[in-house]
Image 1 (cartoon, helix red, strand yellow):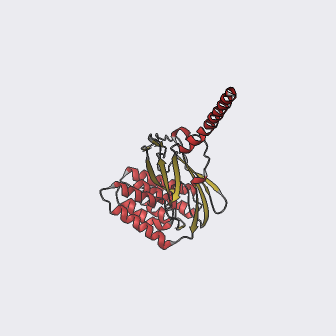
Image 2 (tube, one colour):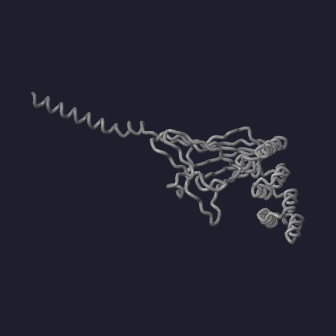
Length: 281
């Protein structure tokens, strides 16, 4: 009898050990600290050609610092991958590494048990020039996985419903940005941030504001020139032409490069002729 009791007790103990062992991975996984990343629109009442910001947030619940690859050039390459489904059904991908471009090491560290937030200007990656429904997928990569293909997890999906172009609203945005860079005579950070946003407006309304930014001698001339080159209408070309013989070497070279690119892309023969004549000077 004692032998049977001891045998049953041993079997019961073994069963409990097996059950406990089988539960351990699941219980441990549930209690493990984690890193969570999320993407959200800063505003959702958006219209054609206005700046669109996505807030990238990271919560680090680990006991060790977390290194983030957030890219190092002005368009976000190559810590972020993005895919945009446009209202007409076309799919676009961005950002991209430029030819012969070297991307420095990851540049953001999230301390243990802390968070990190960054606002991304999505207009750097895509044009939002048509009203309708856009589906944006974004993914952030660590340094070790930067070369792997993106998977676009559900938490990185954002639906953007874009309203029709609103000229008065765009004018107000440009005016507010101008007041920002004018109101920061000694602080370059808000100046360049406002200039960057203005440069990616991609709307003719931004041209006079970019013209004044270019003339302001605030160090944001390259941004202003690139903004004018993106718009590339008659007035933007006129502004660039006035700088083809600028006393500032950098401004002169960038203006001429921008005009050459517009001349190559445009199908307007009158605009091509104007640019061709100006570049001969």
